[in-house]
Length: 210
Image (cartoon, rainbow, N blue to C red; front, side):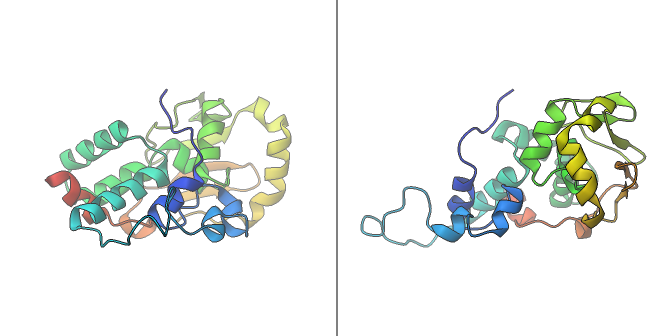
């Protein structure tokens, strides 16, 4: 399975914003953007600051979305094509599809501190979707789906620490978290107002419309 394997902090520096790709580390002084707020390879003496074109701004918004959800270009294009086929506003449909990814739901439920960590947990088979083991991060959830921990995974040190910290987790309104059983449920499909994003979905639609 193809995936991005380089330093993710470079992605935040590339777009000049915190995309929260490293979880709790992004809130500390160790954040790469705090220590070096310049694009990778940038040299003040070698380059002039130039104003980005409309096309460049649209590309940047598309890249922000890709980096945030950890999706490569080919897969992102498939999500966009599906969003176009669905009724309604294409940009909002795209956001909803990305939010419905299993790795994102695991992250939103507070079972992981970042989407990358959530993706790894899913790939390693730590979760059950409606009682069945699922190791596909891109699997799309639907209303009524239940996400629970595999019995063997509840004996890991990671899970034991999570149980102590889960009380402080806040989940979006379209999800329901049983903190005692550490089980999540999808109550409804997310709407645009429920999704906290750092990019402009309208610019993404304009980028692919050319």
